[in-house]
Image: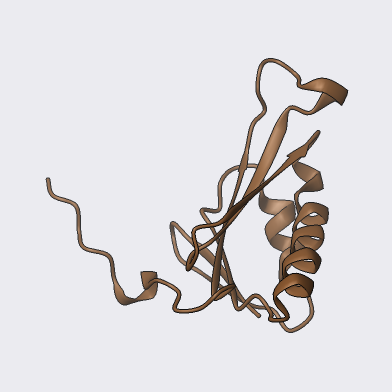
Length: 117
């Protein structure tokens, strides 16, 4: 069985904040200081620069996204165009809340969720 080539929907970004990849990881069996058992990552597709935020519960993911969004959009004076996630288990609340972000359009496939800003 061979792997199918990527389709056109999985193209790389051609500018900063063109596509941001995100993933929520955890829970881990050992807590970090202050009770952190999960983390969320945000990676810029163009630069491959990544951010990691520690979170206590997966329900905090959307708040960390808003924090990340404010930080990078203020630093770079540009807006995030697409946010991609793998629709992993436990991120349903994050996905639902993210759909409510102003000017967001949500697209999904069986393996990938994309929010367009």
